[in-house]
Image (tube, rainbow, N blue to C red; front, side):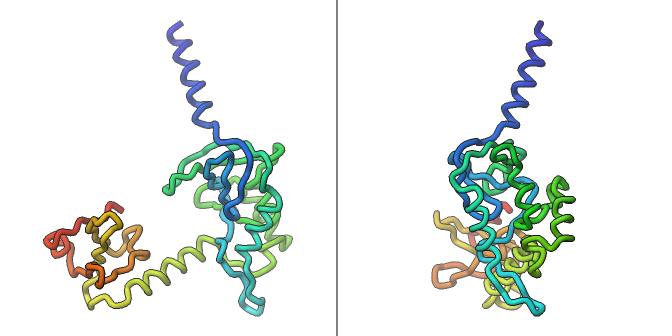
Length: 222
């Protein structure tokens, strides 16, 4: 009997873990929703960033990110969704597969050429994207850059801009947080590129980690 009860508890725990948010949809952008008040990143897809532009190579530039967000809003804003949580991302969002009227939102978006299969995390929508691409549906007929590539280029641009003014050979960023913590970031860390140094506010550049620690700064956790 104890073994049976233990098995039941494990099954119920698994079902609870798989369950996700449900409720009215509020669209944040092409692949991010609020569902019943919970922030959800749609599993297995990647949509253009809101400010992303598409075009080039003879195709006029146009605001594809804003277009996708509005199209998704037209389709799903205010409707009832049910989600199955697969993971939690680094921003604390539930990564989930969501349905409206029994239809997978992610699959519908990929089929309509509004998003790409995010193969880094899932191959679930691989064939759906290939069909859309072959038929030139939605973004596939407009010379769009993959959202992941767009974000990578944006990070590089910010890193170059934020690195301006660094003394030669002294690339470690000594940042002061909003709480007054003295934290240093070395090249390659997660927030290095986005960190700006304001020497007028007491922030500074360091030439070595030993120098930074001696001055009272601690290394960023990531």
